[in-house]
Image (cartoon, rainbow, N blue to C red; front, side):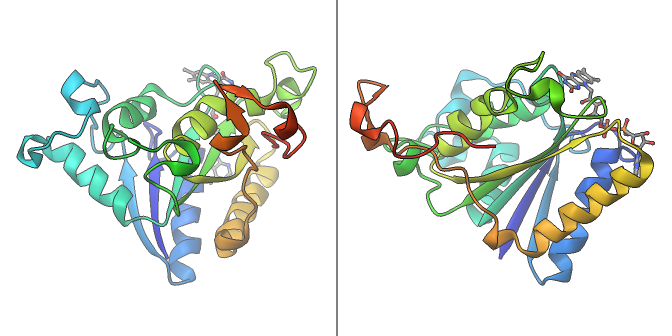
Length: 226
Ligand SMILES: Cc1cc2nc3c(=O)[nH]c(=O)nc-3n(C[C@H](O)[C@H](O)[C@H](O)COP(=O)(O)OP(=O)(O)OC[C@H]3O[C@@H](n4cnc5c(N)ncnc54)[C@H](O)[C@@H]3O)c2cc1C
């Protein structure tokens, strides 16, 4: 099992760093091969030039940082993203990683969604929020539902590129120290059974017509369940 961890937090002593380290430890313990893209430590450039967003015919023109990241993505069976929620999304450096690494002719094109180029791979978001509970992200929550906040990454980037998306692991980081440690253990437990974790049952492209869900597909799956 090849697992790529994409880690987006500026501090190596953060709680996110502890979650990332626990993930690595649990995966290595079960004999998985692990690679890490520590975006801040790598000083990854998140600012896309137009030419970064499409893989050229002449591969000699691909910048070295993108060649290396795409090699890791191609190698991976699973990609785990570890990050703090910033402004109800991922830190900009991770968005920029998607902008530049998930180029046309690599992540997608000609196929998208269940026909995307990363079909067969699985991805999982592991993120932390502020506060002591996730209530603000509930159905009547102040910040709107978590599944909507994560839709642009889970559905529109990961599933768009063909990946199955494992249910996210979300920790409200303002809980007690003991609870934070418990969450670390829960994440390790998840990693021990990574291949058995349930994925989000998104609709397939064939369930839509002109971008709209067909009437007879409506009840087929619960579109985004978190
Ligand atoms: C720009 C910005 C935008 C933000 N936007 C949002 C938003 O939209 N929604 C939202 O909910 N939140 C938001 N936040 C808050 C943010 O999500 C949290 O600050 C973040 O998730 C906390 O994770 P961390 O790794 O930075 O935690 P840290 O600050 O590193 O740590 C959190 C706590 O965990 C402790 N800790 C560290 N290591 C361990 C360990 N090994 N075991 C147990 N405890 C440990 C630390 O001592 C600290 O008390 C935002 C923050 C910023 C800076």
